Length: 430
Image (cartoon, rainbow, N blue to C red; front, side, top):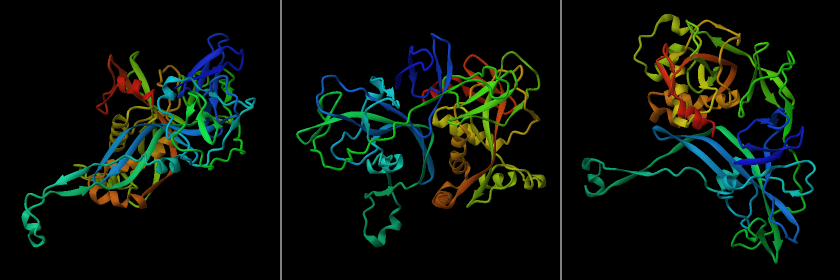
């Protein structure tokens, strides 16, 4: 989705992607970090020559990774949904292809329009519109001896229903899209197409007198709070780097906050090295015994003889600090957590090439439960216990790991790990 906006510095037109968190103006060369206090809010401009009063109805726009623990396996995929943030049969159930074909605009404090307040959270809207993934029924042929007493013929098939035990949304981009509508003869009309919004007449469920809070995006200069020099970031970066004073800064509506990080140095310095960021998390796990590396070896049933020192060895969970498609994200999180990389680290960014961070630590922490489920050797037994399983953060550190930059992938020789560059390009569109 592309958003039309004006540069806050010079007023020149700027077109942004929905995932952009850095506004870069080609005219005045200004670079600003884009922030919001809750959700980014956009609206679609209505068609011209409409005499009726126009009001704007909120829809949740969700894009991100979706993971489901089903019976004895994990299913994953990418979700791109628009669903109403208010409950009414008089509205369209979805915005369809409009986010891909039309260019919305940021809601501004100066907009003298009626923006209705969202009455449903995203999860409530998701449940009400029955957007949950449907799980297939798997035919299972049973042995005849099991059914002799029930008089069931051998040719009959028993249907087994898969069970959803847990689902999680990770690396999501959640925003509010306001669609323009108006009322005529007891029917709500779409103010873009000038057609009825649905087959149902207005049901009186919308609170048309309540104007939403015209919260808008905040634009912060990308100046290092420590040394006052320009910081470096890509369009979708959530953490900015200052190479001058070797510091990292996470973005927030209140400004920039320092981010603790570490660098795992390569044995030999080389021009083809790039340092990829990962989140290393120490967690307090509830519902399953995972306190040390020895516990992990037993839990994952790894083919290793447990050493005495492993019982005291701290356990860290890992996750990429960059967006990649769900299968790659799950693979990297699992492999690094099982490998437990342990090298000498420092906190100096001078002279190294780093890959941008576009997945915040809060999202990485959300992925820990899925990583635990993926590592479990006996999923069919463990999945029913997922409701009572949880993980709370003790510490979270951003770690840069050296990879060799080849034509098609990044390779980590010590860990025998490769990441396709195409996966990273796809991740930038999540």
